[in-house]
Amino acid sequence: MRPRSLRPLLLLISLAVAALLLLAACEDEEGDGGETPTAAETPAETPEATVEAIDITGVAELEDGVLTVGSDIAYAPIEYLDDDQIPVGLDVDLMAAMANVLGVQFEFLQVADFGAIVEDLKVGRYDVVMSAISITPTREAEIAFVPYFGPVGTGILVPAGNPKGIAGPEDLCGLKVAAQVGTYQVTQVEGEEGTPGLNDTTCADNPITLTTFPDNPTAVQELALGRVDAELADDPVAVYSAAQSEGNLVEVASTRFEAAPYGIGVRKDSPALRAVLQEALDRIMADGTYLALLQKWEQELFALQ
Image 1 (spheres, rainbow, N blue to C red):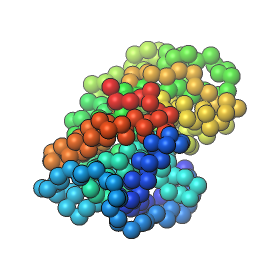
Image 2 (image 1 turned 180 degrees about the vertical axis):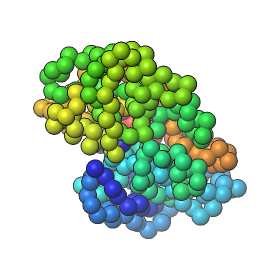
Image 3 (image 1 turned 90 degrees about the horizontal axis):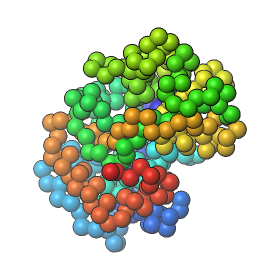
């Protein structure tokens, strides 16, 4: 579970929009822009057939009726900007459904640097973070999580035709590999304290040359241009990138390497917020909304286990 330099992006979605998203899911429908995208705003209206809201009394972050969500909105199909520069994707739809049963609105805010997303949450820049964030021991030491998707592993993207014959992570030794800065894929290659990476184990004698990029689309572009031999990203994102190229530029060589679930990140001093988010997730899982939204984005393979 990301060259972009976007100023903070505000998406204020009302409960009415959340209800429309749910209806669309039930019908099984399915940037480097340089300018700050315009936020879509609608009147804060209560849907006629909305479910009974969860009691959020005493949840400090929700006292203003708005949940702010930090996200790197460049990781399709999990979260990305559509042609109108509005955030869309699985995470956006899931948060809309959860906000509906919480009786609040929400704002998706573009983070400046995915690598700093945990620290930004800790200092209060957002109420929560939701950005295809894999739950790892290192991150769990810093923040709390509400698991909502996966487990998801790492996919290996290669040029069309797979000229290097890559079939798994062991075949990356000695090659040039791209990944997004701050992602778990960097840890998988380079390791971190207490967690050895491929360059410490399998590829110790013939290390991978890893180059990181600000966002995932840039890393994929480097692969398509032939500047690296492979690109690492979360399974759903790797599969989506390959589908977008229709097999003409890149393809998936391998998936499911070291799987972990995605989680909504919450500060450890916000147990009340974490509790109501968990209750909201349980609610939409029980009523079928969760699975409908995964099916909408063709991600049901990664339903929370």
